[in-house]
Image (tube, rainbow, N blue to C red; front, top):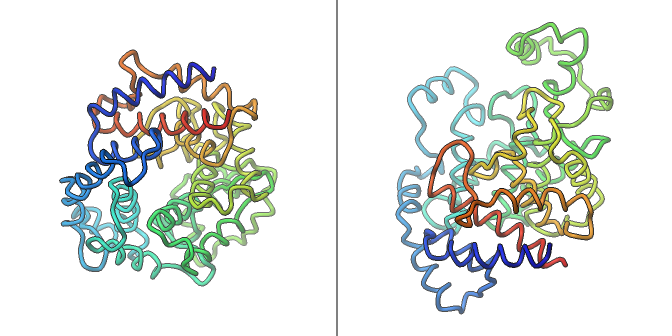
Length: 350
């Protein structure tokens, strides 16, 4: 399979290089073709990234406080509730930080640093950030998303980032994974399973919320996709790659590759494994492979062979990978460069 992967990486990289946007080309040159900053093509690509219109538009829409505008309806819904980070303002910040990271943006461009200060301002004394859809309990998925962005923009050593990392680690469950508190454990108990989600949430968010101890629910499996995003957040910086907690989380993911998620509340269908999604923070087999190879999982682990063979087989005759929902040339470039990065890392571990 080594020769096959090598040919796929070389052929698809060559074709992608001919059509890619500046930021996709940057990642293609750096991660797959392993070009340094002194390479003439990389220098030119970085100059193009600095003036990339989509990046400049996104920066121009940002307010001085680090937020971005949200729709009138979303704003109305947010103002009716407790306010940010509950609501769409927080989601928009996370998504735009992620996109700006893809676009090769520095934290001191525009008001990017202010967006992180805004998020840090919502951090609780326990270390997590509430929201975005309830303040009754924290969501490991979104906290993993937030801490991943912090690290990409150079904030790994910030004490506030470290507090969030420690909180995520503290939420790891006995089986190695993570889940959404209440929704993915307590709600299954006979006392509550008759309630619809809104009724159950009303109870959890009320002053009479039932006592909650996650250790009472070790018999219920963790959520695959919450675990994927928690691991992604913990390991963007490589310091934790070999930690026991990360290895347990990765084993949880690998042992369930292509399997149905236990929880109906979060991408339950096994079809999510084989759907190509961009942005890649959305749960999929590609996002999982990106994380697994980033953490050093390669041919020495026999569990990796089937996912890698699936990824190779999903490549089209034109040499690219395509988003599953509908044709989208821009997203297809991103999907392809992420797929090539995973294959390249796997190849380098032979």
